[in-house]
Amino acid sequence: MSFLELPFDLEDMIQRLQPWIETESPTFDPAAVARMVDVVAYDAAAAGASLEVIPGRLGCGPSLRVRFPHPDQGKPGILVSGHLDTVHPVGTLGQNPWRRDGGKLYGPGIQDMKGGNFVALEAMRQIMRAGLNTPLPVTFLLTPDEEIGTPATRDLIEQEARLNKYVVVPEPARPDGGCVIGRYAIARFNLETRGVPSHAGWALKDGRSAIAMMARKIPQIEAMTTEDCTFSVGVIHAGQWVNCVSSSCFAEVLSMAKTDADLERGVLAMLELSETVDQVELIVTRGVTRPVWNPGQPQDMALYDRAADIARRIGFDMGQQPSGGGSDGNFTGAMGIPTIDSTGVRGAGLHTLNEHIHEDSLVERARLHAGMFMEFA
Image 1 (cartoon, rainbow, N blue to C red):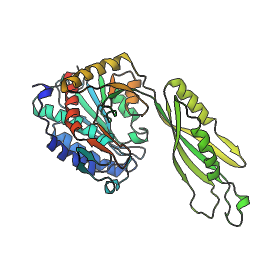
Image 2: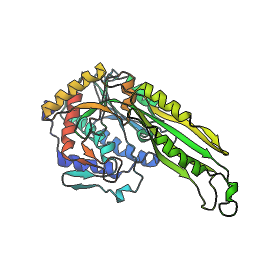
Image 3: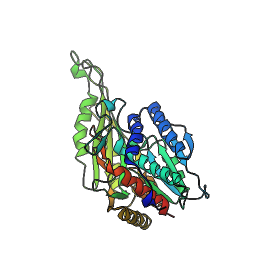
Image 4: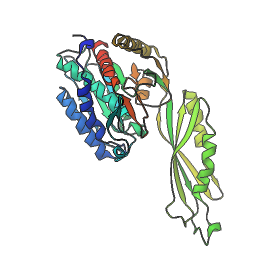
């Protein structure tokens, strides 16, 4: 039987995807991520896989390693690298509930990237049910911390990638349905301003506001943005009492850099912002960084060409281009391991309360993954 003949059932897939979406799993809630691991682990076991739950660290939830039986188990094969965490806090289902409307399926995390993980697993489920053997062993590694830069599981992902021949990352497909071959660096920075507290009513002039210092710095930071290196302040925490001059303020900055040289310049520019002005200190420290996965590398393009041929036989064209959004594909691609990213479902609104996928992409992308698993050798 060819992968083109596997009997994917859209209605059945939608029914089994629903618990994945209704099990909310924000990164900062390890218990919620653990509940998501349980949901996926059951489905993987029912598909015939063996499981290993890897304990969490650094305040993050557990990871799940899924291995499908194979005569060459232990030899280099295909690694499916995905994440189970989302940016949506528990309770988001109240604002973006699971629903089916006009050919679209809605819910937090459905596009990024539960839908992609689901279709990849469904591909192996159908292969196993058909009694077929993939040329190479297939392993899934599903992690809990991608949305915060993968601080807890980067070593785990890189080690698993070293043991395999190819890496498939079912992050959401690009808006045109294409995949990603190459990603720019993503660097995070932590900022802290330390001021001098005072009563904001009767002793205002004695204080030095940490909030005011941070507010002045934000436009300066974002003004450093160029086409090749961007800067965005996305998180700020400060203040507890309106009648107190703030003595501390915290912020987080995300930077995208197209090349290693752009990354180095961006890091230097951020670190040079540290200073003390009128008794208020600004401290900049570098956080986690995703390395540049240079686009157009021969090993990645060769893998893409094979996947694009599979897509054409299914009935759609799958282009490719580099992306400014980071993923765990940054790590494996930068290691030189042939990697194809963003093979997951088509949709829109990721990281928003309108996150959804196109339901017809479930079978399309499950068949794409089945083709890759059956033909990558």
